[in-house]
Image (spheres, rainbow over the protein chains, first blue to last red):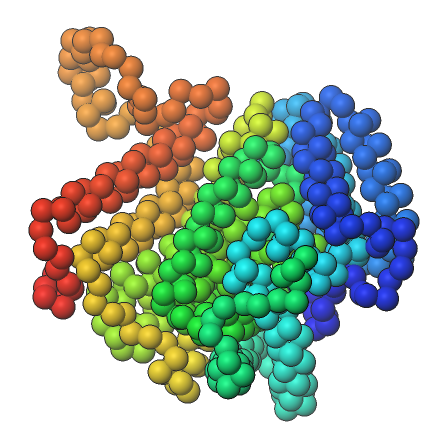
Length: 220
Length: 325
């Protein structure tokens, strides 16, 4: 929904903090554990959920996540959650549903913050090595790597297409016209990307690609 | 559209993850046969395209929010159902783990709703329609648009199903939310259909060779495709119609009550889907909807088994042999 054209990945290689030093498997397992525990805590035990929230906040501050970044992500996340949670008691008009809404808000916020912590401390390289250790199919891992590489190229391409469009229509297009232009934008992006994929494939063939993946991490 | 962590119960998430993992593994196997060594660069690029295309905003008339493409049907039409399912799954994995968009634990449910149903189901609807409508540009674009609308609605119906199964949501009546959800997604689906159709029309006008024509299928796979298409359509229709189900007794029940032979009805053993409602301690609306979906699913499985049984006795037919069907 945000109009920003820039990727919003949290982790970079230069970050050094206590949390970044953890082994990658521990980072992913810990986050999953928090999400599962938060999902299993029943309605009545909301103080436990609150404790979990505090713990996740502490982990976020240990990982060096800035308050500004957190506020920006929460500003996008909370309104949707707020509306979804409210729609339940409005539709059912029972006393119990209000409890349910509050616990939903807490649960979702805890999980979301845990996810933010993860994207801040887990760079793509580590994710791929974890997936390899967890016996994820090698082809899938290669596809994720390819996709991550292509995404940034396509983002730049999209930015160029967009500025070309904005330079020509002076922002005065009607809604219907804007829809058709945007659809053409995606179509053009798709054509250019597919041609790029074909070129990449040919270049890979020229370097001896036979469909199997080899990695320097194999002997780990 | 992305389900966040905490909305569905952990047990539902785990079950959906197991099903999705099987679907992704099957897609991977099929893909290596279909695309061979092109699989990795092409699928990776398609995932990147869907990811980037979701950044293009479509303004909604008079509203402060904007929508974007979901892309399941678009990817499946361009590269086939297997690569389409994988591309959407990759997008969801990367969004969940590296961008915190959509939940980690509910990743399986998201992949199932959007990747498996969106790409496999969407492609089945598209291919089945295109087989009936022909290979003109209009036929291709309209088939894809219908498939896009149905797949969005089916995903919404599945979310309601998963939400109803989650233990968190027991104890109150979620039918109002489901009605809201389905109506909202029927509108989102119109947007998705328009964008998918427009993008495809553009691609067809420039590089028609990029979009493969449907190839003749063996009879069994054709039946499977029609069956999957029917299942997606039935899911969507069940979700749309369930809230409006009449509370009045149906024709036969009404007549039997008027004529008084209802009292003659003997005691019959209770059936599993008695009176189109599953005997669960949940509200009647949800029960009816669940029964509808379960019934459709059972019919679907029956049709697939029937198709299998037919295959054992006859030599495989191709569609080219009976194009007048």
